[in-house]
Image (tube, rainbow, N blue to C red; front, side, top):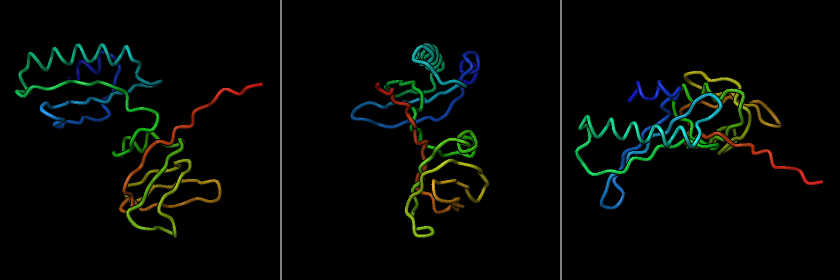
Length: 146
């Protein structure tokens, strides 16, 4: 599938394979600089579906869904965290850290053992082992009415 992704300038962000009811669902999350469009997802869905069908890699009946990870995407890998540097993130902790169970702010730095996040009030060093979940915190610019 990588050559198909590359031919469209897309990066694989995540894959999800699970049973839902009687069928399986393969969810493919893709992105590219500037964001993946609906047209990108439709095109990839057709081409990847044909490729998977011909290859015979999946023997079960399944549905293929291709989409962008969205404005509030989960951050899991080091690559995703590095991509999110400079953006607003929200992180939840497994246990309280410095009296907090979550933090929201601009991600300044990513290291193997910690994240540095600048909040409105301070700068927080978050050990990676206390993270339970992290996601991009979309800041949608709402139109202002006169």
